[in-house]
Length: 180
Length: 175
Image (cartoon, rainbow over all chains, first blue to last red; front, side, top):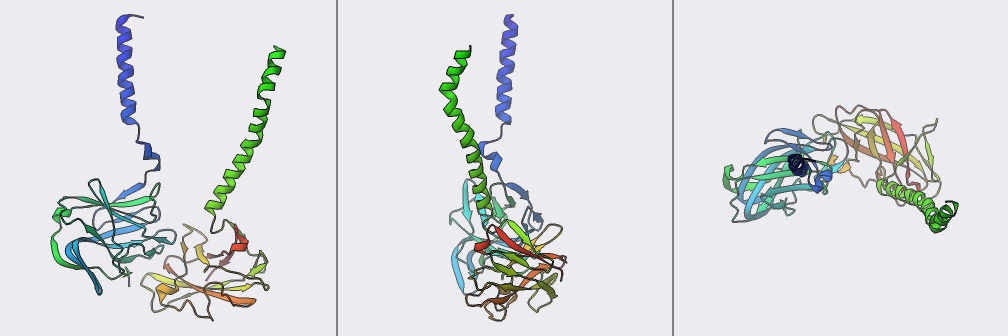
């Protein structure tokens, strides 16, 4: 084989291998959830979840009836149902950078871990207690009806943390049918 | 050539025989495991006979009937399906959860019994929603389901109990 042909083939193979490595999905891609992205006020429909983020609030104190707690709170107002079968809002997380926060279980009136009915939406709130010194500008809210979200639908919404005005107090919305 | 083949079979015959036995046995084991893991709530529906009843694991279930209701606690855009499901245990012990309501067509959406959400008494001895511990030989399960208004039926009512698994009783109702 001619010298120039050997070199050309070698370069082609190296570049080809680099392209294949570039195009290869990460190891966990075959189990990745199916993400449905929606903005605030927009209904998102997944395999067995229909959710609308209706509002975002930040406050120094969150209240739920007689219960209250001070902190750096993000309250997410929601309307949510399952689509096909009885489900639970089992996954509600907020990802900020490489840290992930789960919705608080301290507020009994939250929608977190509550049952969902197919085709009959419920409205209410979930709340996230965040670090006091948090200075992140954005976060990603994720909602799903299984705690293990692999290969399941996940509703995802961008949360512009720095654009949400922080008030003194925020009350969780009552947990009720969305169309009373 | 012939002696070489014979020697090869002598060396590998037992291993091949073991493979021939273990591969199908392993396959059956995996299939059975998947079947059990996936069907903890029942997999094989047993549908009603001509009389509208299901005979399963020594228990008679049905015939079932259902009607639409509009209780005060139901939100707009919904309706309530109330199902009456007679059970004859023939004197056997029986423990069951409330039956599940499933659309027979379309998306085949399913719903759990909704007494709590509708403000109904789920411990009313006259309207048990699950198999009562001291219900005697005969009792009738009365369960209400909150469904969206576009769920018009017909529906299947699925009743599962431990002794019948992986089978369960499926009865068709058209309120």
